[in-house]
Amino acid sequence: MILAISTVSQGLLWALLALGVYLTFRVLDIADLTVEGSFPLGAAVAATLLTDGWSPIPAILIACIAGMISGVVTGILTTKLKIPALLAGILTMIALYSVNLRIMGKANLPLLKQETLFTMYQPEGLSMPVTVLLIGFIVVLFVAMINYWFFGTELGAAVRATGCNPRMIRANGINTDVMIVLGLLLSNGLVAISGALVAQNNGFADVGMGVGTIVIGLASVIIGEVLFGTRSFKNSLISVILGSIVYRIVIAVVLQMGMPPNDLKLFTAILVAAALSLPLLQAKIKKRSVQA
Amino acid sequence: MLRIDNIHKTFNPGTITEKHALKGVSIHLPPGEFVTVIGGNGAGKSTLMNSIAGTFPVDSGQIAIDGIDITRWAEHERAKFIGRVFQDPMMGTAADMMIEENLAIASRRGKTPTLRWSSKAEDQDRFRELLKSLNLGLEDRLESKVGLLSGGQRQALTLLMATMVKPKLLLLDEHTAALDPKTAEKVLNLTEKIVTERNLTTLMITHNMRDALKLGNRLIMMYDGKILVDVRGDEKKNLTVKDLLAMFEKAAGSELTSDALLLS
Image 1 (cartoon, chains in turn purple, brown):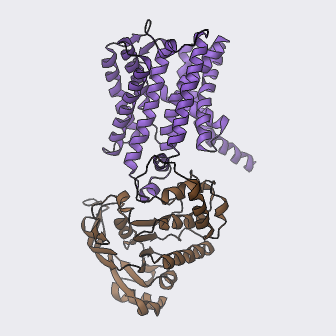
Image 2 (cartoon, each protein chain N blue to C red; image 1 turned 30 degrees about the horizontal axis):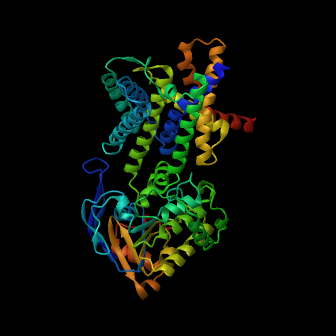
């Protein structure tokens, strides 16, 4: 039972990362690798502030702003300096490795005695795993609602249209460069919050905790879309959150079945590669059955 | 309304693929004039259109709309004055977004987007009215994604979007070329109706000589980056395809044969 609860909680905390990846990968149509740096950045900023005696909510908000700044850096590299988006993200990600080490002063920062979001707001009589589940749910719900609101506004619609058809939205008077920077800002802000929450849940921030986050995010997005649909923007948001939870369940199950934890990233990468190639394979199979 | 003075554009200068696409084009469109533009492949029609729209900067010369020099303006800044319909039906709309969302974006062309809710209830009635005027049954499909529409429907919708906020200049870049003949005719009739009713200053590129003669009150023919023929009023009205070919051959000189035209 505890395992089930903590699996779902993990899914919720990582759902913010998945939403961030959804914003770049699907909405803006950019594969943004900044997340590999902004996730540990959020963790590093929050953990450092918490050890300095800050209270959790301001620490998380500052972490979010730090993530947003990293998104803006990638955005400027790709729009103003015309560096391809994939490479721009890689550059920011690599730069953030050093930045994160500087922020923390070392490679790993434990949060043993510090108050975290989860210890501070633990309701009386509720166990820690249930608290994480509850707080995770509230945060994700709040973030999802803000996203739903924002992408329904004039500005949000312009960001979505930029990812869908940049020429069309330029012909309607929108500066696509600004929209791309804005999208990357929002995405990496969410990813940094995710890092800050995961660090507080795990009890440490580590400079290496960003490795593979883009793949985890993609896995959640794709699983969610396949299982729960993409009919509307609202539907997609919910799908991505549920996808993150399903991904954690899948991981928990394969670990229970005896897969060595060291093989997790390999497993995830294969899962994402398979999911991304699924439409192509389906088309090929269809073609073959038509010929036969 | 539109004044173009001696613009030049060279693509890939200094390389083996160098192309001097516009060689000193000048034209002046008074308000309400509907100009059709014809010319063979590589004549510079689309380059002219894209230069006006700001897709790329011109090398020299000046472009002004309503007395305002826009030569150095970015593409999205010019959108305040210019409505556009592209050749590719996929280009003018956002496929993954609903018809309503596309119309809402177009209804704010040239304005800075705010944090107000994008599609409001009071807009929906107006959108439905406008869609009804297309006679395509789209008024009941506000919530359909534009990607589900046919090419003709998308071009009609794009035309509607481009003219929702009255543009000072409407640019139509072979907007019926990718459609089947019947749909093309429908979209063309709609174009004529909208342009006439709203008295829009319009520049329309076409590959079809008959369309170029039928529509509009002025016709220009381009060849090799220059305007060769420019007729308007009664002279244009009485023009035939045969006259046009003759004028073209005369103006372009002996190097030109009628196959080089292939204007359809």
